[in-house]
Length: 167
Image (cartoon, rainbow, N blue to C red; front, side):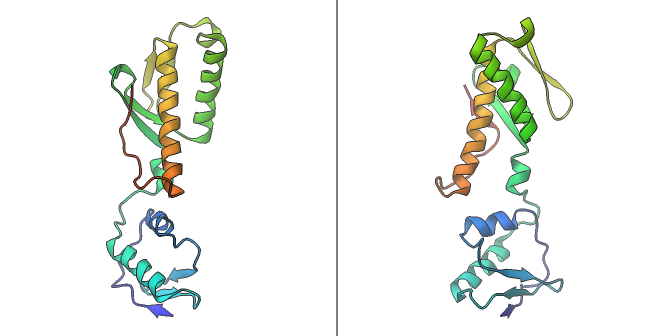
């Protein structure tokens, strides 16, 4: 079945996330260059209407979840010196976890340093003067990412916002 897509408005990077959040990630459909949607015959009228409603409400400038999760802005209620936007790539998270594991195992920053300097995605740095500050940021990033996983799984009803607040 082909349905006119109300014009040829752009589809942005978040459209797939919106379709998945509505439980429509499995049924096959596509959209042609002319703006028309083609729906698999297995899709119900209600599913097709849901796709069309999502498309009508879609904001093509909205970032996809993967883009939102590439960085997280942390805001600390107890130490504004660590307020910053931290990278959240797999390797960045692994580096943070490695440092956090060392801190939790030995009770100190590695290598005998007294201040941990962390480079941010924009090239600036944050200096952690205590291990507790660093652990709080690592925990905050983990909590933020887990919240998004819970949202994606339907376990919570709304996505988490940024800045993400930590103690």
